[in-house]
Image: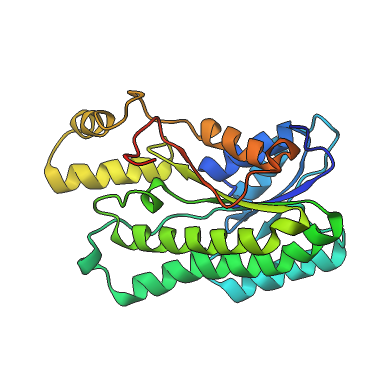
Length: 261
């Protein structure tokens, strides 16, 4: 599980699951470059990362709604750091909730750029360095909706499924070069998005927070919501040499909620 030889690029890492992932990778020795759009949060998060192996963490500022700018920022960084990254964690905020037929076409286009196009651009930029290093791990934080679509998340269900198919295709293409590609599927995990979904449900139904949460918890065999650190622990394992024979998979971290194998 030791990651000290490796450099990780972690998307959406100024808060929530992305930040927890950055902390988990750093705690196991990886050097981490945070990637998100809020510079103030990134600066604070980078300064707070653990450094058990004397790492020097840093960050990049880019918005996943602007793929071309993201690609330019990463290209500039790679030009100055030719060793590149051996670990890539694709993670960004999910599309807004709502029924499928109520979503405008533009919502799908924006979400596709944020998730599929940005993943593709980052993969194209980083995989050559992984090949040169003989080691690579690409891990996508998506959703259990790729196994069982979730009610009220029409755009998200659609786009997450596209990311899962992208990942499986890429996994097959790069496996022989020492690179694995996997998906981690968080269930109901305590984050800002989790809170916003609860608040939206409260507004729609007139129920209290406790009532909405009780309904959600009845669907989770573990009887509780997940913690971001629990999702991050799964990512850290998949990033490690110990997971070298695991690729093209989607791992739910959901307390047993997903109703499929």
